Structures are given as structure tokens and as C-alpha cells.
Length: 198
Ligand code: MN
Image (cartoon, rainbow, N blue to C red; front, side, top):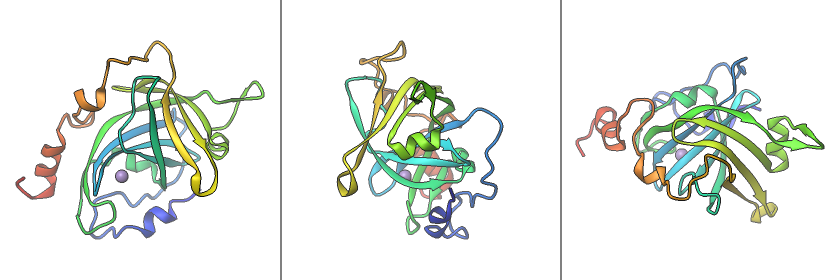
């Protein structure tokens, strides 16, 4: 997999986002990140390391901890692994312009099974059925990513698995808004790095 689409959409002389050099997968545990992104519409970018890139989905409402809540997840272009550390302001006239905050991150374990064995994560994504165990600071436990329909009608859903981390009363998207990287709010990131005084 490559991040060609990612690079072609961006002018790296203008945006502070990483160019993405390596593409190497590390020997460490695979990582995930959820970036809150206040672009033309507010959304949460859910990214998981797979085959040397961050496979990405935009989740308009963010992840839920309630197994009864299905959250729409719209696939977006692969991002370089370094992107998991990106927090800052993308210039308004650039692709995805707006403030980005590292809302949650951590390692994950692929627990997708096929025929009684763990299916490699890249294959699971291709097949449209992914089961992962997340070890973030806010988001923990099992999550399923499922593709339903096909062609233009295909849609992905992000769903909490009913395990010991499931909690229908928690709503971390609204109650835990700060960055796990810098402990800042969206407004603080925008003010610190956007050069505007909102
Ligand atoms: Mn985004």
C-alpha cells in the first residue's frame, strides 16, 4: 500500500502535516489513533496501522462505547504512520483545512478470525470485516469495523463489542474532549498553532 493519494492532495510547503517518508512497519505493536478534526465538518479520523500505513476512516460522530450504537465510518486515503503524531492547524485553503487534535491513541491487537485463525489485518480490511482490541486512553476493548452493501452503496460501520469495556453511559466524545498528546482543547490548539485569536 502507498500514501500516493495522501501526498497528491497536499502541498507540504504550506501544511505542517508529515510528508511520510518511511512506510516501514515497525516491529512494535501496531498503533491506532483517533484524531478530532474540525474541518468543513467536524469529524473523528479513525486510523489503524496496517501494512506500513495508517488505514483511515472519517467517523462523523466519533466512536461510541455503547454496543447498541453503530457509527458511520467513511473510508479516506491511507496516511503515513508518522501522521499518528500530528496535531496542529492545517491552513484553511489546504486539503482538510482546520484544527487536528490527537483525541486518543494506543496500540491495538487484530483479533479478526477466519477459519479458526487470525486473519492478517490487511486481508480483514479488504474483506470488510475487522475485529480489533484497542488499548487507548479513552477507547478500550473490542471494536468491529464492518462494510455493508457494495459499490456506491457500500458503507462501513464502527461498532463497540459488548465486553467488559462496553459502557452505554459513558460518552467520551463529549465528556473527554482534550488531547491525549498535549492535554489541550481544540480551541487551545487552534490558538497556539493557528496564529488567530478566536
Ligand atoms: Mn479528517
